[in-house]
Image (cartoon, rainbow, N blue to C red; front, side, top):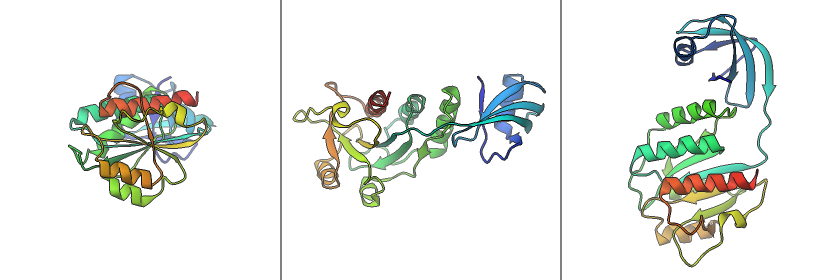
Length: 234
């Protein structure tokens, strides 16, 4: 299946914007009468036929529409950006393929990078959703400081965890929670969280967890956390 993405769909006609239209006509060489699939990123899948193949704006006729049910669980990854943007973009691509629901980039006391271009991350997420046949686009929140994230409190109804380097705690994330929950997992920067930040996380109800015996890089830790929670909900 070749999946295309278009926002604000109003059946029975879909107008693909230029980027998707160019890929459809120039790369895949689709023609009038061919069938394609389109998602709006909100759980809707449209089976369509091409009525006009134009690299600037392709017109599709909807043949069938299906709404994909939402997951019974919710994975919110809160992570400090890595110094190398490429490493964070790689992680975002891979966790999208695995399946997550929400991402917040945070600035911590030991952060080596305070922000990333969210436009590039959004494109990575959409491309990975299309490649892995995901019909709901994960939410990418505005970047914020860890202090502001704690103050926001939108995570208060989640099961909240913080993963950091500490040989004294060995409670694994996989054993700390159960299936079908809303999870929020904090991952720190290369230099890890400052002790003051860890203390504040405890005060806000975050539980310390381990991601295994190995010391992981930031982007690997983010990927591992998402994979563990996905396995838990398999």
